Length: 267
Image (cartoon, rainbow, N blue to C red):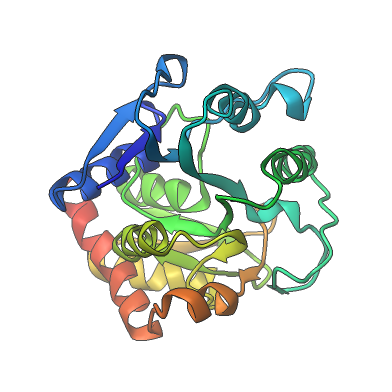
């Protein structure tokens, strides 16, 4: 059994993935970016560690630095890069992998450059780029480099008894943490190569999301804020589903929104 190295001790995604694989009795290590000293001949590495460099130079990106480091050996490895939906840009609601990337944010442009550089270095072998959707998890951290829309929703409901949503109709797609982990397990088993969206592919309005969470929490109200602006998009999951045969139902996802509201009561 190959050892799985998950990079990013400060990353909530990394910690949860580590616990998932550990519970499945996998050989897994959670390591810090600075402590990458891999001696195994065959291994899997998932990089959840990210840090923007001031120069926005893809050569200085952690994904590239890790690849440079582990490629110096003759070891055989499978690399998983966690990218972002922001590499797409544009106004199209449904974003497929065939869509031309035209990022309109600095972060999206930067991560797109990293994707391209990674492909050049790896020569289309032994790696997968995952463009992530919104991850549904109970995250109430106040000081975080990765504050999300769901983070704000949950914090506002917990401490202000409201959920603010944009006044204009906004559509998002989410994937629950359980499904997210199961997909990673399948990816590692099959070692799929290429660029894929990782999402539920299920469009849900922010209004619906707020209603489900409040239903689980059993109190709170929705406030529509005309000055609140957030991305409106859905990542298509069709390409990945063809390889791993894993599909999330709308009913299951809706129940996950309700469950996260219930879990918020116990915090």
